[in-house]
Length: 462
Image (cartoon, rainbow, N blue to C red; front, side):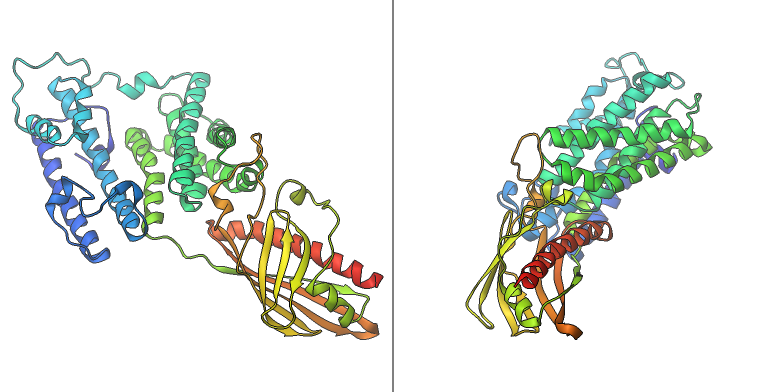
């Protein structure tokens, strides 16, 4: 038996092979669990945890903190072994001539041990049902996946879109994760899985253009789906579209290359199995080892035909800014409206009112009329999501974007002019950060310029 055979669902295996794979898998699982539980989480390991996996934890539905990370890590580690166990059990049941539905007992305590024992030691006799699936006949996937181009394309796109939507809902709404799993692994694996299904019948080679279309369309349907079930708004979907579609196309290209390779044709079922596992595994890794957000800095500047003293009065507090004309603000991204200040000097509280609420900014440095620096103790939602359902509250609107501090630096120029530079330090919990910070930098720069232009207008009018 080759390693790739462990992931297959078609075919059959005999009793000795089933027993050997089971014993080796059990030994590997015990060793890995012991190392993870004791060395990584510094907990007590005992074989009894397999009867009650989270027996050391109470109220599993309300897990939080270290317990939630521990639970996610152990589930992620167990997933490949569960997949192999079920696939091997299905093939062993097929070899024994027993109903394949008995594989559901794999997840039932006590009964799973009885099933495994029977499959390892039972000699087929009177209970044997005549085998309906033998070597050389069509497998389940051969029967289920249409061989024609149009029917195969529709089937692959539809099934992959449903799988992708389920994973997107699980990642965003259940795990509250907006990282590598949702924005990288999900679109790449969606594109790859769709093409692997589309090209499953190796006797009909699919073209590259066909594979690319088949890889991109499921992500389009996933985007429509998350909008329809009110998980995300239009703006966030449009922001995620470039990276999502590009990665889906990359997955589709890999699927096209796999169909052209001899090893890919031999291991098509194994490739389907592995592709389905990647995204949940990345989800689990992100929960076990959450990445630390980086702090970014955005600077914007403008020159004003007014003295620093006049500009300073507009910096600490400015009047209401006219309604925005920029498309991104009109679409729902939060924008500044006015600013007011309570007190003077360090310790004063500045409120920068946005369309979604106020930023609370305690003053840290008051160097009139040169430097105003402030911290940020309260952040409003970064946007009002544009959705057919009106107001929705995706998880990323709360706590995923944080402004930490900001400042205005005024520099006197010849001729009674002033250069004013605004700076914001912020972080966000969206990955890959290098992609998302391009969007956030752009938005913050537009916010800066909206404020700076208003300050310029008001100071020059005075």
